[in-house]
Image (cartoon, rainbow, N blue to C red; front, side, top):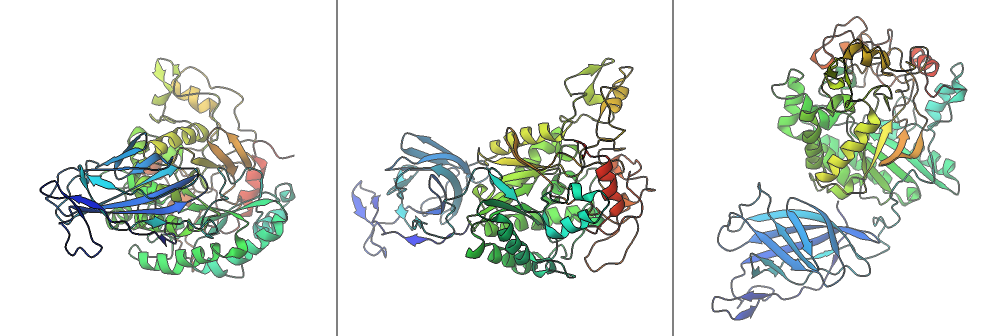
Length: 571
């Protein structure tokens, strides 16, 4: 996260000479002994009880195959997590040792790492650093010390949804209210999707970002209000699904930065909107694709291989986190797929690692990530009460059923809570929260099972009892039989910041047939109800509704079905 840095007074360091005599290092190096190393320690982000710091150590002595940098704090600072180094603390003494991948430090070479910490009172820069026991020159140092810095998130709360109203998009609300029976839910909060550059200023007569933020201020009144924005325009967007392809080509990372993220960041940083709590959900479906749809897997696509090779998903997400997080009232939540995508053993840990890679790219740090969101625009049931992976039926584990297919998770709540722990283990803050999109995962109506299936086989047991009535868990487009899920709610379960309707119910996932459009959205046969599928859905029928419009456009038939099958039911 880039922050305004205030200069600190430079202190002269002592360097041990060859004879054991201590020599003062002059600022210009004249008349001084050779400096064996330099350290640049920068506080990047500081709030009332915590901070993040970036450290770069440069080796000016003999080449090293491993290294250890040490320093001591004069105050009560405590390191809570680190990245790109093993950072430990004993009392006031801190040690940062290299990871396996950055132990080599050539003469003149540098290594960079970062960490998050807590403090109270002052947060003074350490005066002395030693590299493998030898004192280094302090090459710089500083950080945000002005408590009135407009980018200082001193008022940031742990859960932005707690005690706050959530913005009702008047455009979606009008569409919902115009439907028979739609007034029952027209006042529910939904996400605002910024899915192309033109959406920032408003396209085809729709409200732009500033218009939504101005309306949010009106709705806020004297209380607190959250507005939810979906940041969704990566180069080569959604490499595994044509329906949500975007306007930017795979290599257009420069345009993504300068024409899309930078203008959004500038608007969000406007002091006019500083009283809003702005939740951004960053780049739906992008990072999980790099794990599940690349390489030699049957589910791989050439487009995803390209995006993994050029790194533009990781770079784009990192850049977005860095720039958007500069505003102290912005809360970044990264998309984390859903249990039916990355719940398997070979996807679970690798996905968390990719998310951490993105959170340390392009100037971002894990502190730029407030949490993660699962099930965005998807249909996975929140809770499956009629079966669990620990059960055995007819001599077989539930995990062996065709539906579960060896997944470790059967619903979104269990997955989100477990994945949160996995993310913390990779270096994200222990206070990260999860969001779950419940806009279309209710699976109510007459098809909702009242209890477990028959125990004649593990498949009859699971299929007879599962709420999620999709043909296959890989089906994602305009699913027949789906219903509205839990209404948006703050802090519903441990580790969950909120249930949200990030995908506005009634907006299509994709067209059932090719429809020309100026939004870069292609025709994906997974939205065609007659298609027999791909390896990603086990070559099953897609379960999609017919006669659907282009993604993001209003789909009345789907909206009516979602209301009919809502669970909890609508009044």
